[in-house]
Amino acid sequence: MNTKERAYLKGLAMQLDPILSLGKSSLTPEFTEAVNEAITKRELIKINVLKNCMDDPNELAATLAERTHSEVVQVIGRKIVLFRQNQEKSKIEFPGKKKK
Image 1 (cartoon, one colour):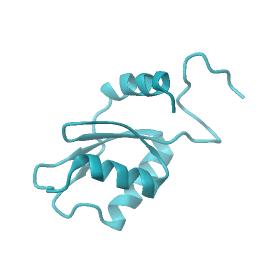
Image 2 (cartoon, helix red, strand yellow):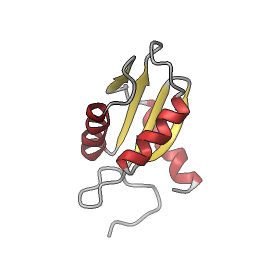
Image 3 (spheres, helix red, strand yellow):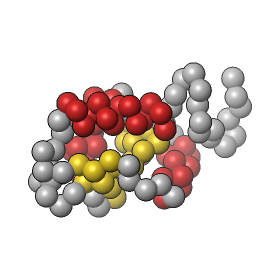
Image 4 (tube, one colour):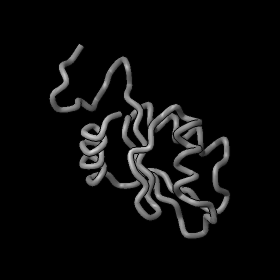
């Protein structure tokens, strides 16, 4: 992902509400699976890291991205934004790119 694509995704993410919250139990296999399902369906998701989660949001974002084969768009405070483009039916079109 280049910087223009990342900037575009950040703009889209500003309008999103967090759909998942990561709490005291931190990263469980069930939470990772929920993230994977959500990112498959929506492509761009925002996750809220609650205050009772003692892990670093940057480390959590990197681990989730690795486990779900997605990319970290940004981590701001306790919010994580992840992106993985759906190869079959992509909902997000980047400006300046032609459809295949």
